[in-house]
Length: 549
Image (cartoon, rainbow, N blue to C red; front, side, top):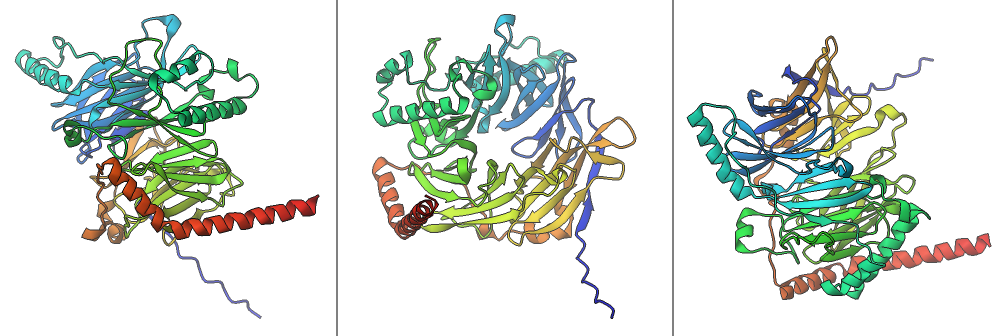
């Protein structure tokens, strides 16, 4: 008897990436400007800027003594952009791109004293280029340095530099003296015991805040071990920060409102339970011994492992130990939801807010990646029960581990996934199906697929990713234009009323309290169910423990 053949599995479509001209030697990083017009490239001899749509060369800044390993490009004014870079020696710099020229404005951590070498591990510019935040390590101590950038002065000086270069017909701005960075705010891990606790009364820190910080310090001591006092390495004191736009407690004056300035920064440290908020509108003190205390503390039940902020920065999501996800609402200053994930066998590793359609103002959506490589989606909101979906199971081989999992903002319900083995594909998170694979040209392979160098250009609807030539020692930039392919048209064409606009809310304390009470009323049924479920779980646990004993 002939066995019936199984139905053939439909073959996923594979689309080919395009390649363009060769990247400069030693190209290690690139990033699109936030308005999508330019592509900045960091390499072993400096910085290049290309036009993102035509991929034509626009400007360069060269220095053969440094190797740029990290780069960011922010739109500062109508025709001016700021570039933040870090080189292989841990030096952060701020450049400006203006009128097809790149100007070095400032060195953030100049190494004047070899015995006090300050190394920058992360550097981030805020939206609009008003602030810069650098994680600095020096002699085993770590702190976050926040700079209020003299953007208005730099814009005036850029105009002067352009005029001077045109008159002298020179490509250099030798006669321009750039405004220096003002005194920075240094944020260190808060310490409650000893001499630091004596200063708490000076800044009127509430007992609740002091209590939370004390618990946090105890948790960190437990995390570090018995020799916590002697451990001050960068590995044991990493910090993660997010710039925050106006919302809730942190409001702004009318000048900052029109410019959409960041008004606060939230920070958490490795091994800690608290999310700390600092206002950016305070004048930094010149006292070397002064350590600013947080203006607001959000305590959590478990250690923070990862975090994400929504585009409008109203919501802050924290991935905690024991597979907990806590979403905080800055408008009310309280948790929107706490979700227990099913991934209890693997710690949470990365998370990101995503836009799913149709959009609802009452729900937020997250993608959560575990260290095991499993990918989950979380949908939660006030007054609605949370929903979690396993998008991708734990990979069976190390080559299938995801190195990039990110939403594609201009495609409905679409994730871009890059695996360690170099495979690139797009996945529909609603149907959980692979829409298509993206493959490099036959003459190329994806460079460093374990840590891919890539960027998504939302305005141009393009993907840029670094590729190596398979027949010569050269690096090229591979790109893909989503709008040119019919397979993506159903995902690109968004209904006019489905696009969610990020808005800022400015409310009085009374209005904020009323909003909080309204949302508490809406979530009463959900909280009642959660309490009932918790009691049932407790009863089951007691019964199990009783039977064991």
